[in-house]
Image (cartoon, rainbow, N blue to C red; front, side, top):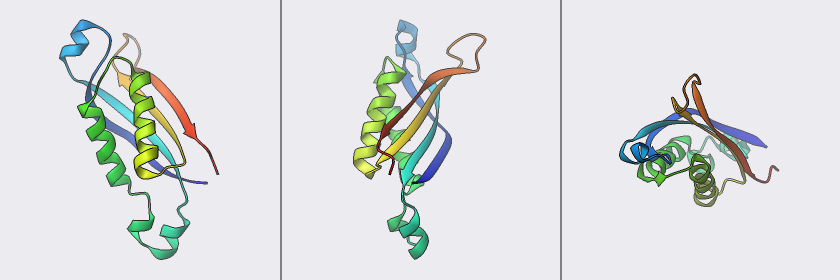
Length: 118
């Protein structure tokens, strides 16, 4: 299986369980590893046969910025399901970080893998 990478993609979201978090937008940072067969695109040099990382990035950003979750776990699960359905991605890994959420840590977050590797 080949992979398409999107690293350190940032978006602002209403995210968190505390009252003060429900009234602000917080920065999230994502690394995405998307399973994809790159051979058809490589052979044809045709974007229509590639996983368009600009389109994926725009969709991820729009989804996150329109969201209002309490838990990063819920956000990342819903995001994974959306990407797999809309872009027909068979396997993915998403690492989502919430910078500054815990004192003395650069960030906290979650990482999930979903789907089937070929």
